Amino acid sequence: MTLKVGIIGCGGIANGKHMPALSKVEEVEMVAFCDIIVERAEEAKAKYGTQDAQVFDDYKKMLANTDLDVVHVCTPNSSHAELSIAAMEADCHVMCEKPMAKTSEEAKSMIEASKRTGKKLTIGYQNRFRTDSRYLHNFCEEGGLGDIYFAKAHAIRRRAVPTWGVFLDEEAQGGGPLIDIGTHALDLTLWMMNNYKPKYVVGKTYHELSQTEKAANAWGPWDPAKFTVEDSAFGFIMMENGATIFLESSWAINSLDVKEAKTTLCGTKAGADMNNGLTINGEDHSLLYEKKIELQTGGVDFYDGAGERPEILEAKSWVNAILHDTEPVVKPEEALIVTAILEAIYESSKTGKPVYF
Image (cartoon, rainbow, N blue to C red):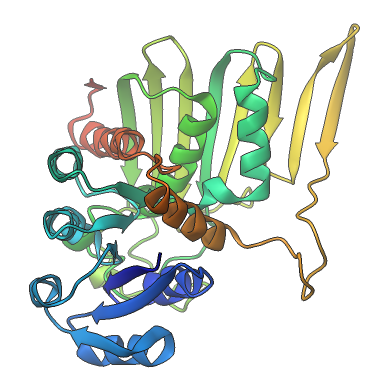
């Protein structure tokens, strides 16, 4: 069976991740492309589409005039819920790029639409498919760390502010580094802990470097007048079972301790650290040990059998879930908790008070 896929939003994340990954999956063909800048949809069709693929500048027209099995939503955060719900109501399974939505209420409405329509919904947390992530998750599931009672979710860039698109627009995105890259770190951490029951959150966002003129930056200086989101954000999360998580995120901060989409875990049997490769630490026969995990991806680069990139594994796993009617690796109920915690950090920063669940 071949699944017919439509892409809504043909910008950076679609070109950088979704469409190249889908092009590596034999069971799919991309037959519809939609973008408000129609030239981008035309370019996507020329590069990734079937010969008779259609191009649209309105997602409603695309959903009404094509026979699709799957839709990938690759638009700014503010439209994730609207587009995902419309696609599911048009009888399509949906892969929505992270974060799930701007707010937890929007995320809940997406889950309700999935249950109402019987269509599958997943969120684009491709870091779960990294080799180190999969190894560590299996290790945690087998009880290798024991009960994980403290963790850190890392998403720190020294100076790497995305200056294109709407990344700096709070209305379109809902926030800055916390909702953009902090979301990946938090998703990984909760997934490793298998703990999705937060009790309360305390958070603080900062706008300390965002107004710097002609700032040094990986993608060139930003416009301070357009930088309406935070430049860094931090959260303390207390879980119902007493476990705690510290979440750190930044696009611009005066720190050399940079790491992104990583987690540190502390359990009753052992600990794990993803920061310089994957290391397990613990105690054995009254001696402390550190065990560096040498991860083999299989094969040699540029030859058959080379390890596949996380986004390709994500796409293949997603397609298999549809074809074999199984649950996707990233369940929407899990992504909802990520969104709810991020939302609570923003709310706590505004009010100066804890946010209780």
